Length: 480
Image (cartoon, rainbow, N blue to C red; front, side, top):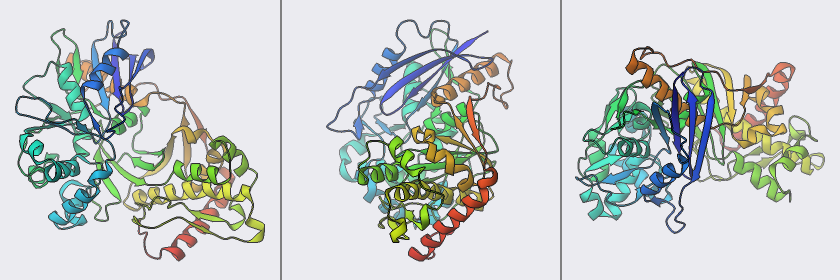
């Protein structure tokens, strides 16, 4: 029996899991928060990630480990000078400073369709390519000194290997940059120049089962990947599976054999960590819809909102909430607001508003699923992630509104597990015990399975009620 480790460096903490190479069973775990600089949350010294990693790995956690996989927050970009030193702190997260830069880039290349054809996505504020544009416009001296570009997991892998001459990344991480195409498997260096003002050295994109290198101590380091791709790999999703993630905003992603080109910009064509593709559709309003409704009703938490919603019935007595509280991306309505429709005397009760909030959130995510289905993506089973997935009102409504089996995995560090699975794959491929085309068959996640059952027709009627209000309020805005 061999053991491998997977580390996940999220925006707030580092988690490490040590797993059995054959089964994926988690043998031990480590955790450490990241040091936080509250003054500049969009700018982070990447050395903080190393400090957190060292703390999480303390106490002999990695003893006997043969290989390490690295998952890290996506959309972080680290500008380095020609000697590999940081030019400035890493730019991380959904950086609102860069919204104007995203619009500038879209115009500079000739519109959304041009970007979709070039790299499978339209520039957004969070993406590295947009942050480079902001850097060139607002910190030109730093931009001029930038000679090398890396993302968070690239940089961590490079550090673990002792900063070798060769720098690497993987398909998954590269596909989120805005200057690498999942369809062609190649960089668009002209887009780096368009954003930054000049060319920069980019990491080599290596295959899913390739090793980035070996440490002087003989520890194999796999390619690494972004958190989204690592979590999908840790869950073990495949063709026919989709993942609906319930955060403040929501996302829907599914495994697909081809890269999708979508000129509307609703689909972001990412690559996954296995050699397949991972198209993603995002909604801006998921759990923030529930939190806003709970605050409006004076409820202390989402569990109370869920309990109240269960006192209502499907359809909320005709009350429909279009949950576009922060504008919306799916459909593309960035400047709109939410809409509450169907107010009648009998529907003006707290429990009906609570139910409408859950149904509105889930119907918005069903719209995102329809975008993927409309492009030929098969969805037979849906993994539902996030703390809100445990709420009774979500589980009662989701299968019927989504029209598919819903799987609610038990909470676990799936990104770290996915990183460990990648490490096991690279280790096995290097030893000749695993096919580099086939990842290790680890045990699936323990989960609760929910079927649409007899409620499917009721759920589809609720969905049609929502669609009717959406079309009346925003005619023609949504075309899956």
